[in-house]
Length: 431
Image (cartoon, rainbow, N blue to C red):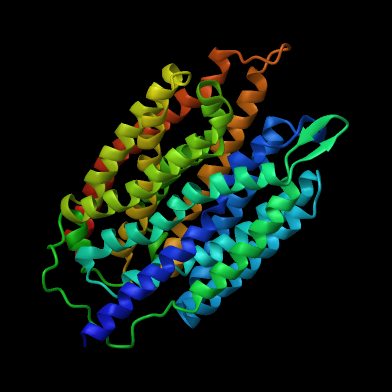
């Protein structure tokens, strides 16, 4: 039941989902916004990490009801609700002044709900239009929009902050409130418009497989498995191994993203926001590259490469952060490794647990992303506070603890890929 018209519709859905994710990537501009918070607000480094950390957690938790809802009523309405929440959340933060609780509620809670509802409605309808051998590629393209957002949003945030800056008592303060209001209006309109183009395939639709690469590795066998209800999924050891690996890989990446601008300050000065842009380019490119590569060599093999390479990049960040010629390439690769997780794990969820409840099942797996981002980003903020000495400088030995912890978690995740691969083969053999 495939035709040129329905194939074109599949690409249209993919393009709309990618465009929608470009708006939700406002999450990744937080390091630019938090870096503009003046000392007069009295926020600590842990305080500055809190709205972002809460947004990450709420985003991941809201994926569960959003995924279930989009499985039942389709993606268009759920994504539209997401647009209303993200737009409204940014506006609430814009009206909060210097209130930390206002930013936590607006950007963290409401914004997190909006991103979760929209993100849950983007990948499932897109991958349903294509054969299993293209799952990784399509998932990578869709989620690349989320990662690429900072390429435009970080410079836009930086420009708006400066354009709305004011002088108070001889001190120039960036226009954070006005910037959040502009973001709220822009992203509300963009998301709701893109959401109208999201659509699931008609009942009985079978995507064409002509010209598609054969599925490779363990996920080839798994892709033929029966659909699993969420209750059955969470009862498997394989699900929990995937959850732990996702927690480690995504959590470390989110920790880097939350401080990307700060990482670039010593080497780039006032142009530190370019560290956010470079990271975003890697983030987006890594999603497409990893998704396509995993269609060829398998999900677990690609995960192994990503985790080990990311551990190396984390260690290198410790020694090169003051060198712009080395720092930016490393941030680019680190961003790519993080982004890879967002293509690999939805594809793995489809491979191992089926299409029928993909929205809900991936929503549950996605909680690993949220808890990883919350725990590691906030822990990093506390460690940086502890490392700050009386003269304002950092105790490098204490500050680097975050990076050593991150590298250890990534190596543990790399080791789990071997166990997960064996579990996948065992499950496939038992079908």
